Length: 191
Image 1 (cartoon, one colour):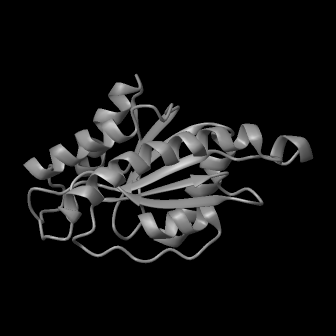
Image 2 (cartoon, rainbow, N blue to C red):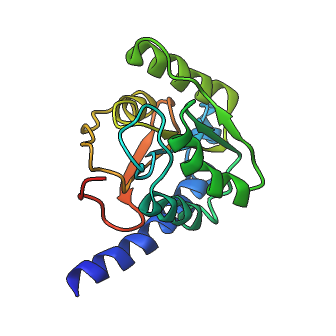
Image 3 (tube, rainbow, N blue to C red):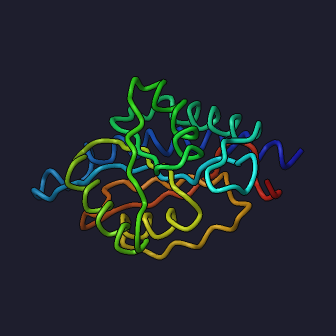
């Protein structure tokens, strides 16, 4: 019973956190001080994959998680959605992007992850001021991207972590806020 209550609570927590993140720039001091409030960036790892090949599709559990992400972000007011060049990230982002009437933009991850992280986080802050953006990445790109967006430490993801959602309000601003929550079914089992 406790596990079910926790999942229900988290399903309620994520939309509330997104709603709160959406109104913080309106009630905060950024506009009053002239500071750039930065975008709200929602970052998740791709959903469960069907196998360990180079470019796998989503498993049935992964497709269900992608739909759960769309439900979680239903009222987030997405302005853009990004995924890497791999189909598992695009397939994860697609239901939420489609519900918001958006295409999934491909942001290729190439070369050094740290260099990519710094460049992409700066691009998000520059190109999406005051917007809400979804980014779907990988276990090795999500933590460093979130860290670059919030200017904070972020714990690594394991191969079985699929249910984390990171919400960075005021990404790359002077005072970003980070909310870490979970969505969909609890992960922890292998693919």
